Length: 118
Image (cartoon, rainbow, N blue to C red; front, top):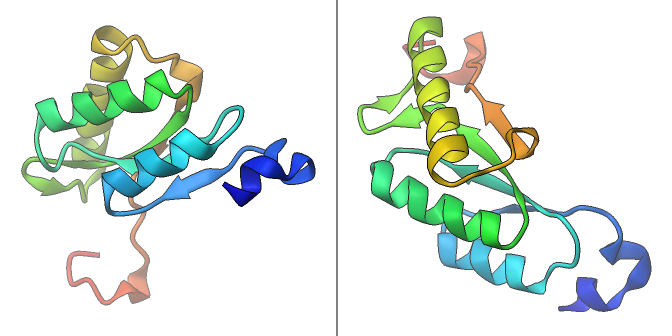
């Protein structure tokens, strides 16, 4: 609420990031103008993904989409393209999301991440 009351701050887009969607939604309710939600994925299935996407669109926010689906994290190029393409099609065709408001995070893993798969 403080940010919304400060004209110099409220003019810039905010990136709202939380692992709890209720926190994201609370943040969206307090923001003026366009925000960016970081992030949603298809980890919990298509219905959950679409429900969150519809709420984000209703608030006029852009969205970061992580390359995760029901199987898990996309780790190879082919799977990343498949998961991101599926998410894009759902957002544009079922939610009527503006393609310019979709940002993809394909989870580029570093060599030193500690993840054996990277």
